Length: 145
Image (cartoon, rainbow, N blue to C red; front, side, top):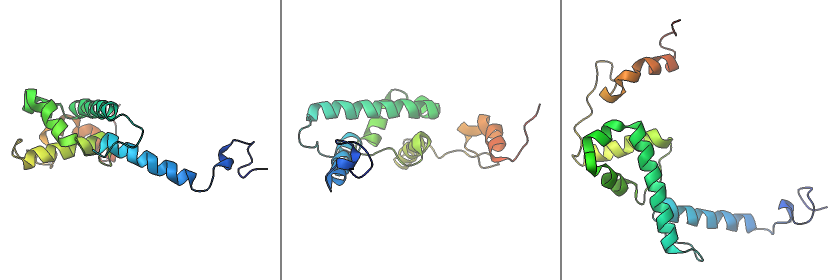
């Protein structure tokens, strides 16, 4: 019986090194889509560019929902600024909130945003409406009702 207990043609029949080769090919494709890497052999560069632009658009929409203040501050420049930030840069660990934070930090470093105002408790101004939720989640206060 083949390794893996399956019938012929199953995962256990994969030649040695094939999984590693597939993983390497997937890494090259992923780099082309999200990190500005070269198109892998056999892939249409134009289609990959379209898909990469679509992924940036999806990220931009998510960041806009997470940080509507950035959209308001940048106005019509938001899409262009986000594309310049995201092109060739994969989404950071931590997801969309980390992406929004990194984008805002980049804008702030470039002088496009003022320093983040802080409240007495150290909470950024845009997060004030959510302070109670943050406290509830952290266990600092008990739910009422």
